[in-house]
Length: 217
Image (cartoon, rainbow, N blue to C red; front, top):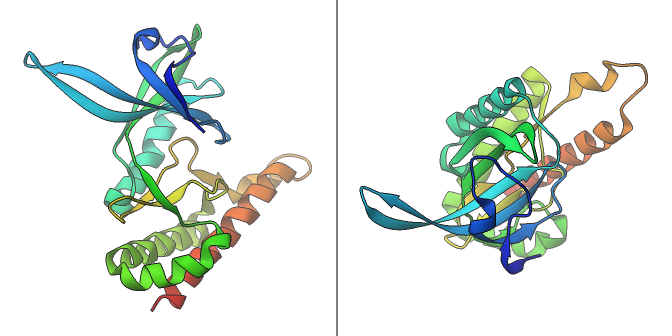
């Protein structure tokens, strides 16, 4: 979805959101809304335009929680490199409450990978795009290792989390709470059914990504 010539409709203390033209490009994310904007910034007196996305969370985050978001982002970026878009987390007040938002390089989606409905197109595509296939293999191997050794399940619940961009590069787009913690399922009395469903679906989609790697040899 997209609303052109709009503005971010949240009060962000360090950002004059009402003066920044932005298009709401996604409300489907569980954790945040995503806005896209061409920000005009000055550096050494020279204007530059940056194509960015601004991710505004649906809930508040403490400073400690914001540091955990940064930690998980660094974990992804260090392991997966350019698969993870460059992102900065900014601690500020949103609608009068302490929180955090994320600014990331914009990615123009070309093909949604994690949707099994696209299998017939995806397999021959990855046979041609060898670098993208190698990156997909690296992503699956990293996700398997995090799940096996740390009980961290990378979030593939959203169909738009894993895409090819217009340059045919693999990109993982999530920023907020990128891992589900499987050991939290039984941390409280009873099982968290919503968390269980998200973990199960993320694992199923990871299995599908592994299938794409194998089928596109």
